[in-house]
Image (cartoon, rainbow, N blue to C red):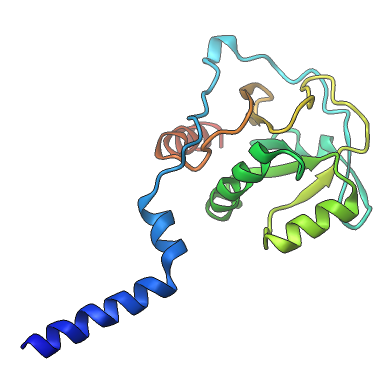
Length: 182
């Protein structure tokens, strides 16, 4: 009986040793702050969707294509430690919500630097470059900065700095938001 117990403990130890990162992710919560939404009565509308984005292939698209859709815009930079930490959280949320919300990850990093960073971290979310054309309705002044734009054109989240976008609380908010804005 002792041999079986010892063998079992050794096997658990070996499996745990090869999965340390996954175990940490499962038990450790993020130390990032909770994002907050803007109460409906204080939400401002998007005044303009006049914004050109450049995709990783160099093709220019117009932000007008996202009008009438639920959109999360995240402005990030590989030079910002907060952005780097937050992108790990975004990667998890993106995988689960990519069919419900349109994600627009925007950077001013050079295409070479941004593509290298995305590839090294194995991120699969859509990445765009701002192209230097400002969007009048939102301000991308310092990374990270995030907006949640409702299908009706209202800005429901305007958050500066890193946040735990994958938190249970934000997921509940996002689920309710999606349900009410389809």
